[in-house]
Image (cartoon, rainbow, N blue to C red; front, side, top):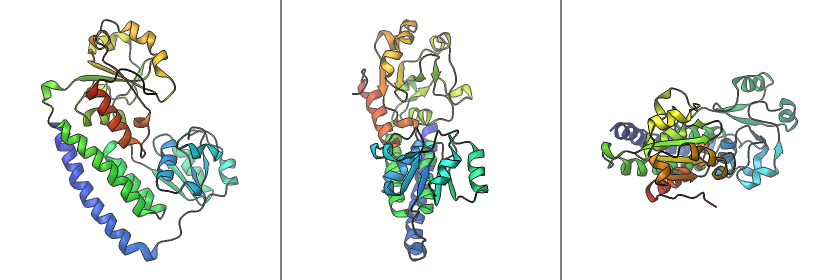
Length: 295
């Protein structure tokens, strides 16, 4: 199976990386510079990583979308991900601004650099790249030990579920549709964390071959592709009530008639520490058949 080859390579690489990073941390510890004391985060996932690395006290600014953990809500807001206020960022006198390639325009990073602000751009966008991305960020933050622990936790989660998925016969892999937004219908497609998670768990994403990360689907296209399970993400509010009209129009599908509908949290939308939680939550929902939104 494709997943077997992919995650076996991931496993071997993860072990090598963990050993090298641990060795580097030990050898380089006496030479490390001071931890940044004033950090601005320009992406929700980056904010979650910073707090998970126990650097929340150093975070002085975040975007208006940074809502986790709860402590982040008390930090100064510097605008959105695509249009943060450079004036607000500079006013905070940061010694490091953390951006994500998946959400922050390149122009923002370039303008900050021209102004002499030190930046770190988190480039990982796929599931298998996130652990190394966390390690790289930890290095810039002078927090390699905490970053290594966080990265290894995610790697263990990925590998554990990959091993289970390898036991699923190809004929038993179910077709799944992950709904990002019901009206208009936006779904998770190619090169997304959601697609990675579905593949990891032994499901076939019916939108994976579109070549678009978040394609807009018609109801007719969904009916043609006949997903056997439909998953609704809740990253933008209470999805259950919003999805009622869509479910009515898809009423002829077996997934609707047999109530194979699943509602999950927004953890899979962000390339951060809750990815492990998101994988576990989606796995439980798919395998246990949870049909109602979590509280």
